[in-house]
Amino acid sequence: MRADAITGVARLDAEVTECRRCPRLVEWREQVARERRAAFAEETYWGRPLPGFGDPRAGILLLGLAPAAHGANRTGRMFTGDRSGDFLYAALYRAGLASSPVSRSAGDGLALSGARITAAVRCAPPANRPTPAERDNCLPWSLREAELLEDVRVVICLGAFAWDAALRLRRALRPEQPPPRPRPRFGHGAEAPGEPWPLLGCYHPSQQNTFTGRLTEAMLDEVLDRGRELSGAGAGRS
Image (cartoon, rainbow, N blue to C red):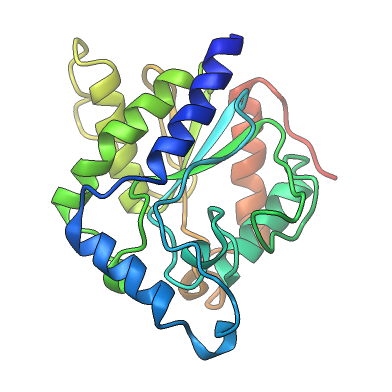
């Protein structure tokens, strides 16, 4: 990866945090930051759009839906501060992609190696449901990020919303290529070959999925191992 691309990623991350394109999301994320949950009443919430997190030379890009209101919107790091993040970072650690199995805050020293985490929508949405317009407003950020992340070889989509967003992103990156027919369907372990990188489906590590057993540790480990294979890093367990 070129040095100017690494600088470009850092510049993009800084620009993302200043975005105010979606009035509904701006109002909500800032309201949540003011009217803090009782358990976090003494904390200062991030309350802004979330930049991506991880290795700028990543071969694996993990794409989520949006920041959680009292998770990433509080801590300032993707998938940090809630049960979904606890489940995901523990798996990343087992796969040798994270320096720690625990992610608590943006300043805790955790680092990713070979992976980067981002989201289709960068602001916490009410009821965790962004609108189509809000999704489309975030696409240019994802487009710039993907253009800068030259070493990405596979995108792991955490949930159906992320899968659809990744298909849109591939279309934006390669507009000269006809869209795949039939349209690839999301599923856990589903793969969608294509340029500039294949997609790999994974159930979202939400409590709704992990508490019910719809997504188990072993299932997530298998997806991450397959992601390592597709990225050229090979499968690995720590």
